[in-house]
Image (cartoon, rainbow, N blue to C red):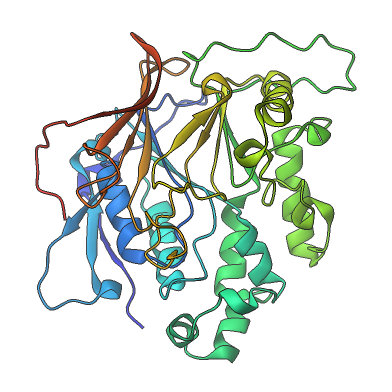
Length: 364
């Protein structure tokens, strides 16, 4: 089976970071649910100026080559790349998607590559993916037995997930337990960069634990094979909850604000629930960004599926943002432009505002 070949700039690989302080990122780029669509994963990362696609003739999807984009190759302006889970199922090339993200992690240099768990990662580790698994997906692994082995303890993907995946990722933040007796801080302004990234959503019931504690608990349960736990399988689980996407404002916004205050962040970015029109959404006054646009070409039940979208947060410094926008590329037919501004420091919250920008290089 053909692996992705990641071309990494030599100067980039030579860069080292010696400071013990958290590194400020120039940009944070997030991609939501991929569902086996390797081509659109690459295109989304290209739209977010993370990767550049090497245009080669007579190559299949699984043989495409990529390299770091010029805007992700400067160690003085590092980029955080976040994938929000559900790389597998529905589409045919889930294994290649995992390997691509693993190769990016191995060659991250001054950048940081973050991967969070989705409900489909949990389903596959439990052997419960069933109807979501395609014949093409099975063939990519080399058969049903090889696929099961890859997801079983000690297997290729199981090991990736145990060692490198998080249940929840937090950038910045300052945790205050609801049992600590400390006063919960005021909600941070939207100009702050502090953000939670999670597949479905973190609900108030979990705020007795820090994000580190949640991730440590998840890692222990994966390692011990104890996945049949509410943390992974309940409707309120961080990988299953749809409250922030589908709940009414009264159902979604108060608990969201409570969680954001407890963890000292300004917003939450979630996947899991595809948008009907192929566009990212903001809710609760910009406090949650719904990043799942049914990126996969195999999400045919959604009329505007198959658009390689990337969320980009541009930082002024380690703690404050300049803007938040979504990039869709040329294939998006749901809006007049390729870019959607969601928030800027100058204009505040901007909903459903599309703008046509000039591009410096051709897109697929």
